[in-house]
Amino acid sequence: MEFKFLMPTEIHFGEDVVLKNKEVFRAMGNKALIVTGRSSSKRNGSYDDVKKALSQTGVEYVLFDEVEENPSLETIEKGREIGKRNNVEFVIGIGGGSPMDAAKAIALFIKNPDISKENIFTAGKLESIPVVAVPTTSGTGSEVTQHSIVTTHKDKTKKNLGQRIFPKVAFIDWKYTIDLPYDITVNTAIDAFTHLAEGYLNTNSTYMSDIYAEKGFELFKYCFEKLISKDLDQDFRKKVMMASVLGGIQIAQTGTSLPHGMGYPLTYFKGLPHGPATGVLTIEYLITFKDQTKIKRMLNILGLSHLGELEAIFSRLIDIKIDITPEEINEYANSIYGNKKKLRNHPEEVSLEDIVRIYSKSLLTD
Ligand code: NAP
Ligand code: ZN
Image (cartoon, rainbow, N blue to C red; front, side, top):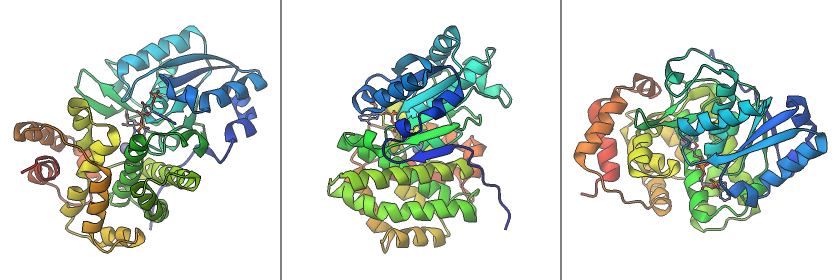
């Protein structure tokens, strides 16, 4: 048995962790750039807690609250300008995966003034200024991963920046998710589940990373029931947040797999949110495996006896209809098939026909 396991992020999980550990901000520097989405963090208490923690510890800050869903490189450059102009020493990302990923990318762009949207994907390994992450959705796990996923309009898709930007500290407080609407709760939970599944069924999975997946499936046995019955109480919020963190720690080791890569064009061209864009492909992806051993183990932990039961759960939770043609599917499939990095994470041989089949069976109505 041989493996590497890296989780450099200091994790604070629980109620009021931002204020209870406010001195952590002081240790990061004198001035912060707060990166958020347009409005939700101002309503769910996360921005107020961070502001209070900063003012109580004498840390100055500037706010950049223009991060859109699936943040573009243009937004990253804009955030960098504000950060540079104000001489910030660290970045605090508050929100769902979009602001957290943007915060990581901005922190890297601030540290490297010569980097721009034109050359980031061909740059070598780069450092960033420190990042603190405060998630307000239970889905991406971005607060504990090195990944930053951005929209690149030049390439007409979403891409991983390909850098290692682990937040120094993650403050994870489920109370910020209490009022998360049902649809965003489902979409982001599906994302967390797909991380657990794609990391578990991954070429890079190890004994250690599997521990996180299997604990995550245990939590999802409960979370799927609560999602279906729309019973989103505090116990559910805590557990789905934990599952999301476990998924993040796991994909920090393994990366994601086919459905994530295949879902990006569905977000870019068809406007599907990230969770359902990936989740809509999950069942057909699972069917593709010739060796079903680990899938059976996953189903067993989920308390399900066969894939059809998971399919029934997914069809209750994901209800999307998109207009897509076989020509578009061929185009997306060819582009994924050309991305050998994504294919490498799938532990079995995969053909172009397999990818076309996953898309077609998942998305075409007849
Ligand atoms: P998101 O795009 O960050 O946010 C979706 C929506 O939810 C926004 O309208 C946001 O509003 C709202 N929202 C966030 N928190 C809320 C709360 N507590 N209450 C009410 N509304 C809230 O969604 P996400 O699914 O968390 O993130 C998706 C992004 O993460 C994608 O770009 C995906 O590729 C990326 N991702 C990254 C990783 C990684 O490892 N780095 C992994 C998976 C996915 P505001 O805009 O007003 O804040
Ligand atoms: Zn994801």
